[in-house]
Length: 369
Image (cartoon, rainbow, N blue to C red):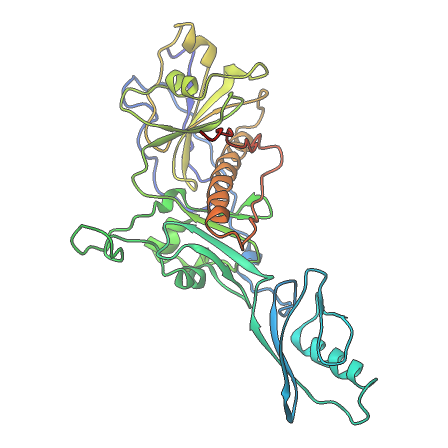
């Protein structure tokens, strides 16, 4: 077996932090010789700095505008899809990308064309809809929240009520406890299609504020459920998806539940990823030899990711990052689509990592009886 399966255990981090080696990849079979690989993908300093740019208006933002001294002119206006607002005698004014003070100056300048005396305008930002952050999964109150100014990750947790817990769940039948219902090991943030190297375990369990980054509009923050009993089969398979785990499930069985590999799959470097996103372990196995019975099959565990590549990999670090990006992209698609269905007023802002192999397959249409 040592001649056919090479299990590479990542002792270092893919993101940041160090939590030990973790359990063996396959506790049910003899463990082959391992090779340690260390990654130095540190959290960039700029992620912990607030954006210097002030808030700028966009479609959907709501303002209260009035001529000072004339309460009858007070008007609630909404920035339209074209970026324009309409107030008093004025034609449509393009305010998309302007700050509130810049918008005030523009209105006063344009009113000067119609009013002899210098107009004094009062303007208040009432609601923000053009800048949002997605906080989904096991939050107390998950949803899509406005982001009127700079917001840190911990502040976002406060907006959504913090991580869900049995003690905070009023519908729970359990006695009061602070046990979290979220799995911080698999939590992630996606920004413009890329996974950010944030270690939720260090931030929320160890109080490491170096992980408390500033969020940006349309960031996607997801807390997966704790105790999920699923295996994720992704990549070059017929139906990439989450498979319900059982204690006899193997790599071959998991791929079979995804309806097998596709024609262009490279089955000699199938990956099995286990552990947290910040400290994963990876095993590279020859799936062809497994199904031919030349090597022993490997049992999978809940939360494992089985990835079938489309082509041979050359660098292990890039291969692992591709797998993790594919995983978080697939989860974001499912959760974002679910949130969009639950709230039709919030269009989804899901980003799919380029080259990840993630595709969106619409559900089959069931004819009405």
